[in-house]
Length: 99
Image: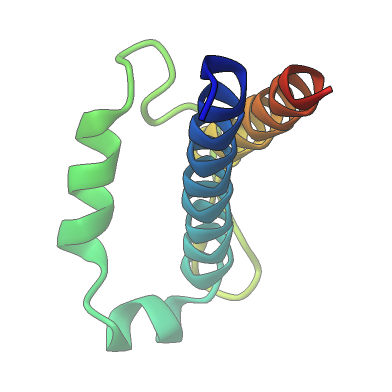
């Protein structure tokens, strides 16, 4: 296997991992919008741990209450968008390496 093909495969695997993380963050944002769901799933500790993983300049940015009793986390949404953009960039680079 040549180095270009191995690099393309590695970038594809990285892109898939980034996409899975982005979808997970999107689902967390949706679950947090409803207070009943987040309370039943006991997500408070997990969300606090995720907030600690974020850089300090974005952590807690844009926490907006929703009419459903939950909160919308803009910081998680922005990180999900960045992960989707990185996924796109990795897939483009992998495609260029293959051809």
